[in-house]
Image (cartoon, rainbow, N blue to C red; front, side, top):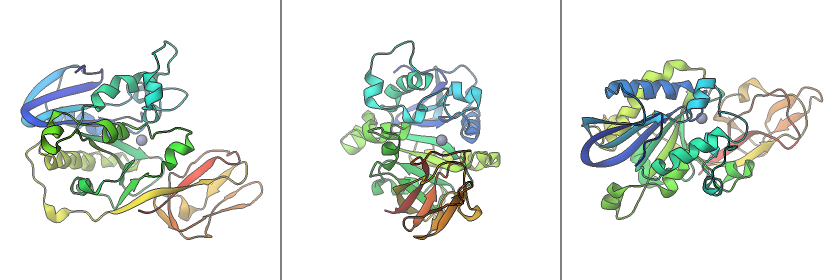
Length: 320
Ligand SMILES: [Zn+2]
């Protein structure tokens, strides 16, 4: 299997899963980048990317790397205009013949795709744009994986079984790294274990991207995840199991007006609870308010100078 640039393969004893940990899939989310650097240090990797390093403390194959190196260099979400890397794993687009004009994020998606399809596990490290409780997310929630989800110190799990997110982007599929692994991942290891190829993946949203103090805690969590799947021999204290609530994306709250919009202070953070009829924010020019259409929790509130009518302001999640 070809190892792409900015990915490091750590080969352990045979008989374990293929596991990937990514940071910087969004280039401006630096906690994940920091954590992958710490992991490279921890496993004693000092050389170039795109190569294999042997290390007998692990069972299986560990791939550590930086999702979108160009975006990391620029400190931006994606490397250029158009959908960012984590929207770019759309099968139709991946399968179109490569051209010199292709945007970098798509080129990078093509480099990573064959590797992702061979992963039994993927943990993709992300941050949010506004303050938020940590959470994990994936397209489809699968209760079979709850023991693994439980390792992450988060109150919430977010799934999108109704494809609310891709519809908002006018795409058929979620097109994220975890979506690839969950829908078409798995190696011979999973065939032996489950009788079929099976990939398990999620994005770990560890909090606001401004909160850089998180990286030690996220690093420790990743080591516990690697222990839970027996890639590393470290057992966690089961008493520390987290109680998690599972939500699904239900609605996009779209701007009913044009111009500058501000969320009221109490509705600025991710996972804040709303009731039907709550005024969540207002348009400066008209002083018109935006009203929550039903009970739930607000997510991914957007901060920008002006909105067009019909553009998404945020999402609403309800219990699955
Ligand atoms: Zn992200």
